Image (cartoon, rainbow, N blue to C red):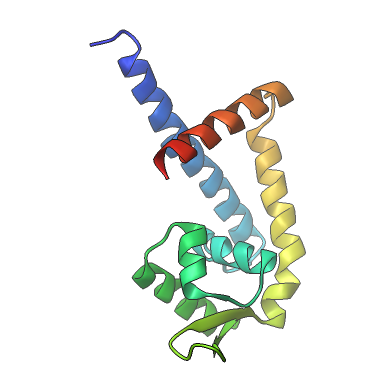
Length: 146
């Protein structure tokens, strides 16, 4: 077994598991403290809709790396919370387009602010050059596996 085998396993576990979980937990605490009644999973859907409103559920699946049943459940819950609405596509009636409601649009700046704070807290003591190296490594890993 190569000497770096275990070290690479630790790196993978840390990057994909521990850091992600820690950031998600911190952001969830901020959402809870702000009484937003929003889960991290719901936030990920809203985030992509804030970037491009009116996309299909399949596009949301692709953007968030979730399967169709999970996305249906998320959209159902967001719809019940008054955050999104489904509208049948005019060009393909089998396809639902997901649109933000005013309620969700009004949360955007607050959620972005909390997410920005969380990222800043996570990166305390990490230099810009190390951040750039990390981004490049993760981009290459993603490209290798997509």
